[in-house]
Amino acid sequence: MKPTILFAGGGTGGHIVPNLAVVDRLLEMGAEFTPHFMVSARPIDAKVMEGRGIAYTRLTAQPLSPHPLKFASFARNLLGGARSDALRVMRGTQARAVVATGGFVSAPVVLAARQAGIPVALVSLDAVPGKANKLAAPFVAEHFSAYPVQGGKTQVVGPLLRSGVVSRKSPAQARQALGLDPDKPVLLVFGGSLGGGTVNQAMVELAGRQLVREALDGWQVLHLTGEADLSASRDAWGWCTKATGLPVRVEPFINGLADVWAATSLALCRAGAGSVGEAWAAQVPCVFMPYPWHKDQHQKFNAAPLEKAGGAIVLTDLKDTRANARQLEEFLVPLLTRPEKVAQMRAALAAHPPGDGAQKVAEWAARWL
Image (cartoon, rainbow, N blue to C red; front, side):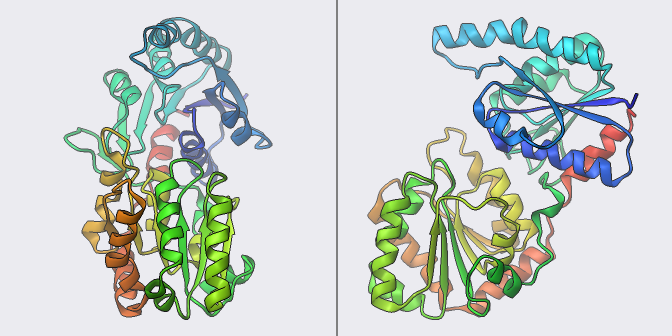
């Protein structure tokens, strides 16, 4: 029987996909092992794991919350339910090591691993570790971080990205695969499935402005809105296309963004760990508008290395449509008419590659096989 490596993380796909990236690297290294994932009971986790041929266990772990009832549920699972279930999985699989990518699933798994005497590598995916990671950090053998941590003592390894995230296609080939004009540069607007409302609304506002329409002459737009703003965004860009002939494709999602990043010349997006890492690896110049309602502002810190390298501009989301549109006119729109500046930003990203965090974590895990 092959030795087992356990992978903990869930609640969002963003905590699961980095673990899949580590599995990719272990397989590429020729490692003989069986992966087993521990995820949350949320439907999104089962959806992400579906059809992958990887065994997984859904734990009853709950997020940390100041609300008395929710805190009680968190504590029960941290010390009892989810922790006990994780311990049973560890003993049943005779696991050799655990890789935990944060989120509320990780904390009870880390405590169970400590009880079982199993080494744990904790991965902070954002530049500011979340509550679960801060809770779990004292109990792990190694603490990695995808981005430089503010005041933290961790090993910075770069983002954990799956092998196929950087497409081998040329920009023209990727655009053609997406049904776009292969010869025109692409502005990607990527609000994300959740929390992209102010980005989407600012672009809806801009789509009606003559200055913006003129700057977009010779471009094409790919706007990924999520479900909530799909209709309004399609209406706004529809009017713009009627007035100018600008080619625009508006979609709620596109599964697998490798072709999207390969096709993109310039992007406006949030600064979640996954988006920043993928844009960095694909060398896509970005204007980032970090999600403004996070108290720790971790998205701003995620984007900082790209801004420091000269490959990105980081704006403050002002939470007001017109105010955001005004600052995008100031910082985004001029880039549309300065291809030499966009090329400089891309070159800056190429000169400062992000590193392969998944490889580093995989090398740690392979030590226990």
